Amino acid sequence: MQYKSVFVSDIHLGTGFSKAEQFLEFLKSVECENFYFVGDIIDGWAIKRKFKWKQSHSDVIQKVLRMARKGTHVYFVAGNHDEFLRPFLPLQLGNNLHVANEFAYNAGNGKRYLVTHGDFFDSVTMTKKWLAVLGDIGYDMLLHINAVVAWIRRRMGIKKYWSLSQYVKDNVKSSVSFINDFEGVLAQHVRHHNYDGVICGHIHKASLRQIGTVEYMNCGDWVESCSAVVEHLDGTFEIVYWRETTR
Image 1 (cartoon, rainbow, N blue to C red):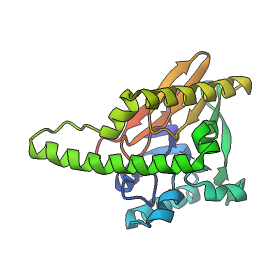
Image 2: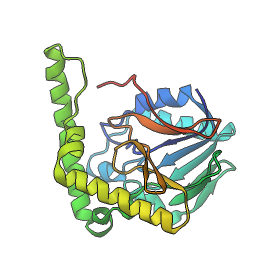
Image 3: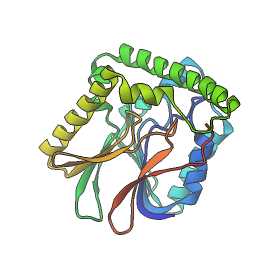
Image 4: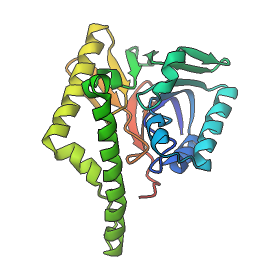
């Protein structure tokens, strides 16, 4: 698969839930001029609680470095889970590896996009970090329950995947309200700074839609959805899903 640019977020390397093996397969399947990692690639929060670093996580890092050496322009946006990088930003490692809190992206369609993880627009993460960490632990618990539910459904012969954590995000009133507030605040910031759109992550919910005059794109995650935002060579954007996931 050949694209102009690929955008991914929330891989959460260093956790047991990271779909690093599937992400590595995705990396091997794409060719692009630019590859953007839109935050929460390495989960420093989880590593502090319990270190889980598989060989596949190292393989992802090595593959990314090889991509940069071979000429792909690699951009790394720091997120709240890999905030340990922020005191050292911006950084440039070699000719093709750039690390910053955000980037401006000029797309083939003539529009200008803000590329940001999105946590700066999350009032909980920015003002009540203890609550954000507690919510992160709760999300991990839901993912553990997902694994049990998936095992039971397989034993019952039900092949269709169902996610409790995704259900909570889509249906629980407070969760839906949080997502809507996050998207609205981010869109307002983008309009104020004269961008045409935004490419972000953070909330683990892939999306490509208009919010007023703003083109809002969320990359999703590589914990559950295994999704990416891609820009085709003709300048059009799309969300793609890596279907070969272990669920």
